[in-house]
Image (tube, rainbow, N blue to C red; front, side, top):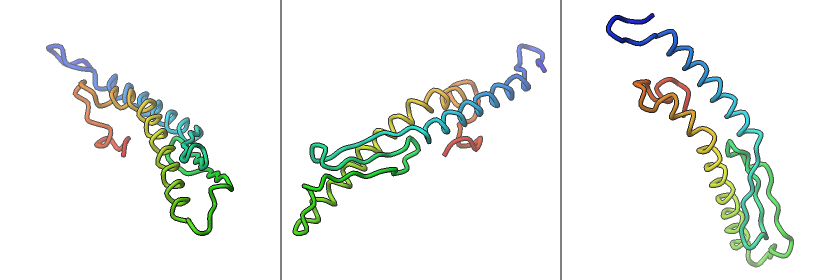
Length: 119
């Protein structure tokens, strides 16, 4: 419905919001199926994380395993997981950023969180 005096068409806005929500769901599914890796110690430890930040795999080179220095191994594991998680976060921002802007950016629409689309 077009309101007198140049108003807006609420049904059109709702349709656009539904389309954006569908694109958001599709992007989230794609992220869940995408994997990124992070490394530490020059490749001695490699972590694989999904685009939705789930740790999928961890590879540790046997030469870094020293029973007398478990702390270094733990540090390398943490560093590799952080590296992979940072890559996953960047991927998420690339995939979802434009969608978030489309729903919440400037058009007088509420942000994603208030619509229950984001978190």
